[in-house]
Amino acid sequence: MVLSLDAVSILYSIAEKAAPGRFPSYSPAHVLKALEIISSGSDVGRQQMAGGLGIGEGVARTLVRRLKGEGLITISRGGMELSERGRELLETLHDQIYGVELSPTGLTVGVCDYAVLVVGAAGQVSGGVEQRDFALLAGAKGATTLLRRGGRFTLPGLEVEPSPALAYELVEKLKPSDGDVVIIGTADVMLYAGIGSKSAALELLRKCS
Image (tube, rainbow, N blue to C red; front, side, top):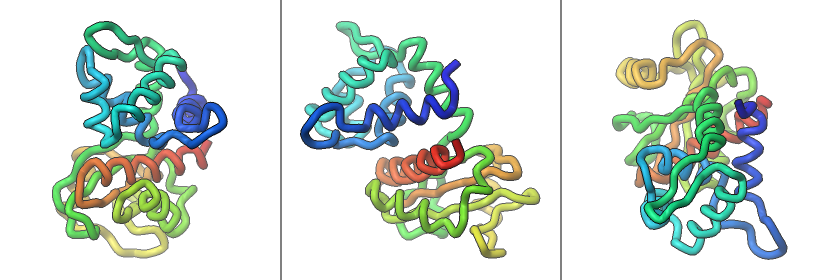
C-alpha cells in the first residue's frame, strides 16, 4: 500500500516542472481530480478528462504523460484506466481526504460550495486564513474552514457554529470524527470550488505529514 506521505508527494511531483521551461498548467489538486475522473468509469478519454478538469488538451496530454510515467494509469485504444498502483494511491488519499458537493450553505460568498474532509488535521489549523489563501490561489472565491471537536463544528478561534442544516449535511455526507477538519471551497462554478478546497486540503495534509 502507498503510504499517505508518499501519496501526497507523488501528486506534487507530477505537478512540478520536469525540465527547464514553464511549470505545468495544473496543480496537485488537478492531479487528484484527474485520478478521480479516470476511476469513475472504464476507458476515460483525454478529452473527457480535460473537460472535467477545465484544462486544454495540450495540458491534458502533458498530465496524462506524467501519470503514465508514474505508473498510475494504463492507456489502451479505448481510453485510460487506473493501474493497480493508481488505485492504491487514490485509496490512500481518500482515507485522508474526501470531498463532496454541498447544497447552498449561506456561509460562503460563491454560488457553489464543495466540502473536503481532512482526517485528524484540526491541530494543524490556526485561523483558517492559510486554507482560504490556498483556495484563492487555485481559482476559488474563498474557503471556510471548520473544526470538528466535541461532536460539533466551529470556526477556528471562534465559538461560531454553522447552521444546523449545514452541520447535518456535513455529518451525513462526510462522517467526520473529532479532530477532523472540513474545508468548504466556494466559487461560481463547482469545478473551481472543488479544486480550491482540494488544494487547501492537500496543503494541510502535507503539513500534517
